[in-house]
Length: 370
Image (cartoon, rainbow, N blue to C red; front, side):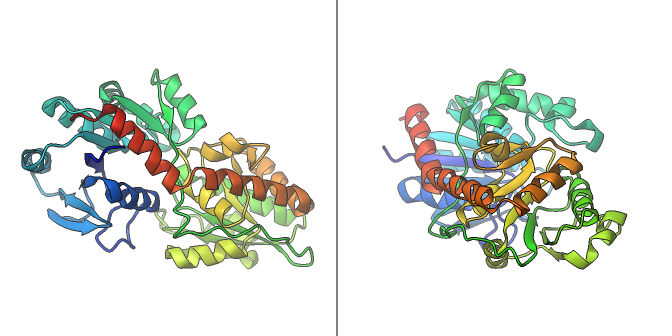
């Protein structure tokens, strides 16, 4: 496959430290693409002020949030395009997709749009999903209709795209096995509590209300477990003050945001990852858990929906009783838990970060201009 000059567009997740305020899947993809291509990433809001830095072999152009940012993005891109022409543009999420589409049209360059979030979701009761708002719906429509190719991470997301009259290819954003190595599933000792893990920022779309209700139901049923919760609290302690949180307080540890090494350590100690989200395009944490030897019980979203029955246990969103029942069932069925873990690990390693990079590289080679 030939070397190309790429422009990636993403709202954030590419901090110059490579550690804080990052999206790991994007870092892993960036690093791999930069090995064989000249890669420039245009970022909207990584830092307040405009700046540039090198990251994993790529050049990051932070546009910043000061007045005139649209004009600044256009001029920064045009200047780099004059220096040496880009071959293809690649936008992530709605913002990146719309800008790759706009600049692609302006400069007659092909664009790829990877819908990586709520682009095709509509959850108006919590104000989530681009399809809930006219302006965002139009942004997504423009990005998708202008792109040479639209990609998504899962078949479940592909179905949501189809419902919005968008044809999308499935290209997962996978785990870098050299940085997040495979750990074989291990047998749980039945004499100790089941160790449950939840990794997600506390936000309405992650629906930790349902998570806590399910855990309270397990407690009422006399089930023995511990629960580790990791992630930024964006709800100002509202969840911790709930009656369900109080009911499971002796079993629960709220860790807040943790670095990658500490999350990995908790994962290797866990027996189950529990996901309660109302929508996910992926999510990466399911793949990370699988690589670490941990199966997932969760709502029917993203990879959980794709793997339901063979590599994950899926329940409907907002159904706390079914979530509790699924966790309880695996407490009493160690062979099935291990079967799910092994199959999840097999699937996750097949779609690792190297697979993601190869898949996108093939698309670039197909659409790129000479």
